[in-house]
Length: 109
Image 1 (spheres, rainbow, N blue to C red):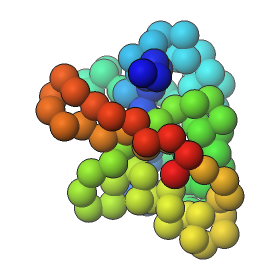
Image 2: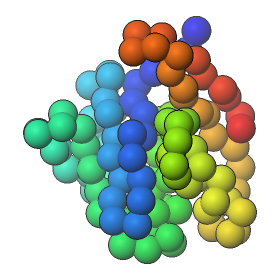
Image 3: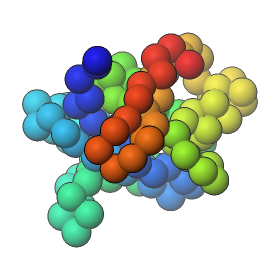
Image 4: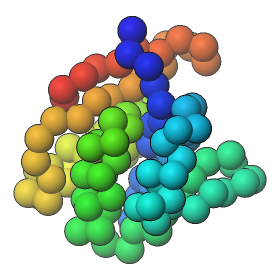
């Protein structure tokens, strides 16, 4: 089983949120421009357009941050959308939950 260090919980036209499970990645996120959202215990960054969002996603993928699967424009679907638009290339790793404590990883999507 892969060790999950962080995953994207939300992405839309305003911001990206990342949940950290391994504190070692925190400094890398801060270097990208993420700030701590204490209320949600997540890190967030403003992404005012698709080009900036794609750049953030590329950096997250390169850090081996996973992209949540789910409903209604989940981060994994947003990644695929940006790839379809030609703003991203390559594969990413998706994380999905079967219950609150059980998840599975789909690498190289």
